[in-house]
Image (tube, rainbow, N blue to C red):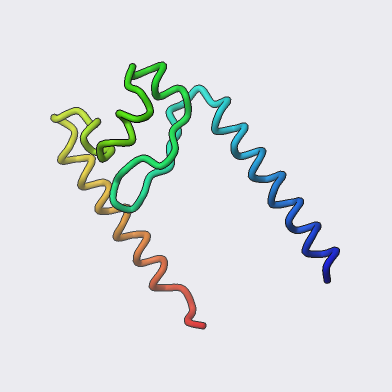
Length: 95
């Protein structure tokens, strides 16, 4: 049992390293955000592309960085995503 757990831990660690490398090497704007809309993690492309520091980006909700003309549609898409996600969670079998 101990060997299986160690193998699982090693596999998870390799996956995390691979994900972090992908995150850091990507040329796309990648992020992780909290449920309340603040960035938790951003790759370096954000600062290079937008000129904002990581501290500035993390200090405001992501929706504040959306162009004013796109806010309503973006919020609508966010609401659809959250409703779909909630429906998926509710459809999971009860344990």
